[in-house]
Image (cartoon, rainbow, N blue to C red):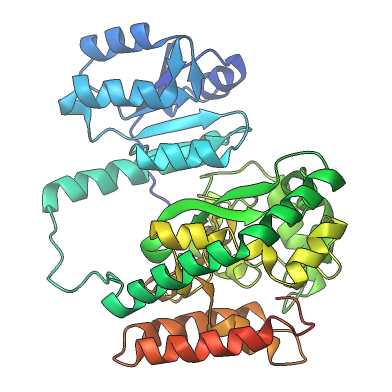
Length: 398
């Protein structure tokens, strides 16, 4: 939704990037743009001025980070807590995004900036914050779905994860040595994943790819099985042209951005190809192919199970760049159940010869959530576990 207003916006920019400053000063008919080169000058300006519509702050300012400055504003200016605070960065980093969200930053933009998108976003955030403060809406009891793991499921998770780690320790040591000998870099891989209720956690795996695999994702995007399904040539061209335009809001992701101007429509289109999978992935090492074939790379996730981040059975926790395009109303239910190492779609996919579409995956994820919240949840989990043992030795790599 684009909010249009004839009133000039007063923005305080904290930072030294002259390119950004120049952009906003060139549209002085729409915005009263104030610049503070550091936190000290910004605090002084806020003390002297009662009205400001939004604060834009660079990720790194002299002497501290933008997130640290946001905390200062929250502590010292209680009367300004409803003012939108937007972080501006020269590059996107998933850890920065995660920290920004955890600390209540309202939005995160990556250069090059679109002044029109930011001004529209400020209008929207102002209205949203004002309405939330005014209404003080309390949802009715039971309106918010919250999955809670049952006693038997948690007991099963702890018993299986603990025993499996103990038995697998010698094999893990051998493969750790093999991974290290084949390629330099850490033998384990940690990524941010989104699990139950959109909870973000550190996800552990043995490294099966070369150390720069994440950086090369876009290089091999044309090989992605899911990227081309149900999308014709004209849609592909439109996607590429959209990606080349200045971005609006940077959504919470690793490797994809969704233009602010397209809102929910682009989210729904992106959801069609949210998953990433390659045939004969060129990023995988020789040892990686073996440990993936035998699912040995998944063993460190047993640590996630012991920590309570995941269960043995559940929906696959998704990378941030996949999860952020599945936040439309029709797909959010997949996050209302447990995250797991194995699940319904994995055993279904391995039991068929044809490739499973992303649409089918999401439908099975939602179906499993229904099972997980039923009285037969534990029995269904046991059925999936039994099918998983058989599926591990099948050829299809899912």
